[in-house]
Image 1 (tube, one colour):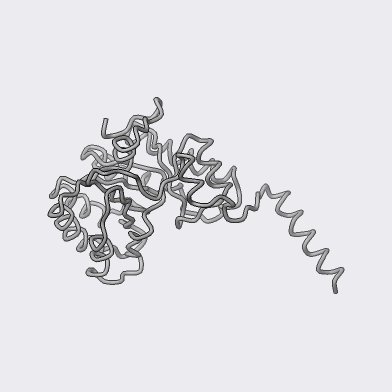
Image 2: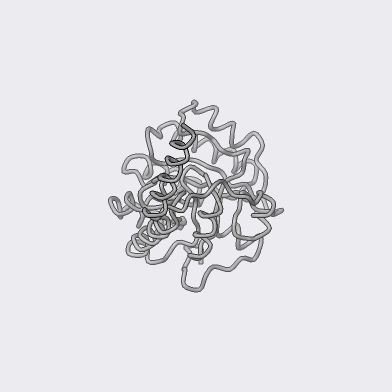
Length: 254
């Protein structure tokens, strides 16, 4: 029995090697160490009253335009971590986002969890999405958010080697709007303990986002009343830490 178990383990390892899989456990670097590297961010240290609203998984033909309408109402800017396949399907939404001063960032092409185990797969996903955004928006994204917010050394190293900064979100601002917890819970999650430099996680696709759309209006009204400015992630990084973009990557706020 023990012999059969050893054979099974061997066969699994052999399959992973032959298929090009590079199995990687969760990152052995803690958040503090990763943040010190200047390549991974959960939030930004700043005294300015500004926050970054981020939206994952779009664009969506129904919810993203509604979100853009609300952002325009309050003259707020946001960063959209788009799925490449969705961007290719709805290029007119990407164009509108760019025209209205929002930032487009990379969230892989297919939103596939396989990328956690295969560096080449992730590299191709990043490149394909970047090329798609470049063809529509006219610039290459410089920010990347891992699928599901999960990261390991393989993901971070691959992203950094391809000139990306990895953007997570403030732990106190995961709205979990994808669970459809109710409009008030989404609102309270954002405005109950807002701090300068927060990166707020929301979704504009991946399911029914009507609660997010309704919550956003009240969130922006509350933030505005508190004196907060909503800016893109790159602008917040630039203004607070003097991080300049890669010369080959043109960002909307310039």
